[in-house]
Image (cartoon, rainbow, N blue to C red; front, side, top):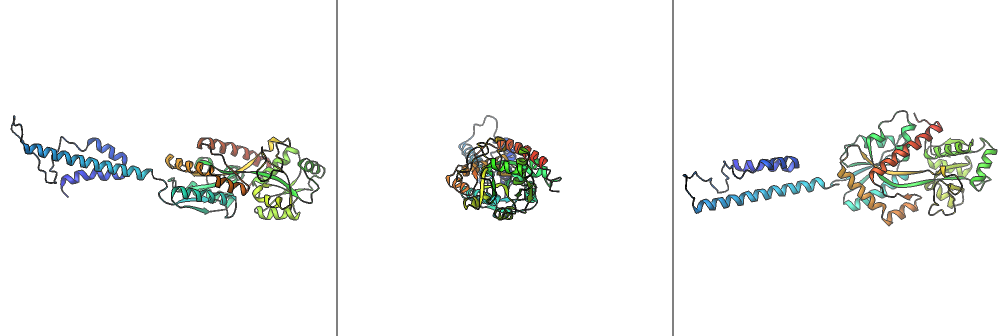
Length: 389
């Protein structure tokens, strides 16, 4: 390689690795009027001419050749810049890891996979769901909080991990508000107030009357201390000054089994858990904690209809990214989420599973939603007195 080519290639190499560095170099190079080094491509530098010498045809030819070379070099550098820009803006360019901080088969896992499958189809890249459960989601979520903020490790989480845990746990392995960026909801869900089929009530009013007349004789089951079902049950107790005893289980499956069997008499849980048993007539649904009736369950009245709008409360599942993730990557995920939420296929699949497809909102609006939810659920944790450590 000759000296001139070396002078040409070093800014090109810089350009390939740093757009900013290239633009800075381009201001100083190439200097068309200060060429002191032979160009090596068959063109010799012009010799100095005596004053007054007007030049010859050879000088003109050499000048034209020099200009062509310079134009080719400029075009080459422009191509490098375009290629570098295109590479930087292409996201995702490799598989994305989507951590679901809950076991396979649950709501978090289900919705994470529904989104991952559709985003993979849109982007042409694999989106791999990784189930990392434990500590009500804290273990998996903390891994995302500590991950490189490059957009290739994201979190599909839920209300328990993001909004309840900060008040439930005395110490947290990460700060959900400071360490994670909210992107948007995947789905929401109401809670259903349901009773064992042998409990002599058929409406929420009858349940209130019966519970008031039989304090501490009824018990309600939940998926665990500090779970959504536990906190909604305590909200119900507080509002109506009831004494329905709490029985925590290790998950929804044993809880619903004991409700059917009569070991507990009441639950405040999700339709995805209770729905099949309601439709089979094994338990009785008295109300859903929503403003409007739930598609697929048109016969279940809402708490608003029953005069208890302050019992309107629901859970949700959403997407989050590590703090520091580039806006460009967040924009891509948000755009893909919007497309997924608006697809008929996703809406039908999610609705059939007992969830409500989320409505797309901006990241700023979703951040405000998460902050409000954290405050509300935090107050319920205080009322319940629940603690996890």
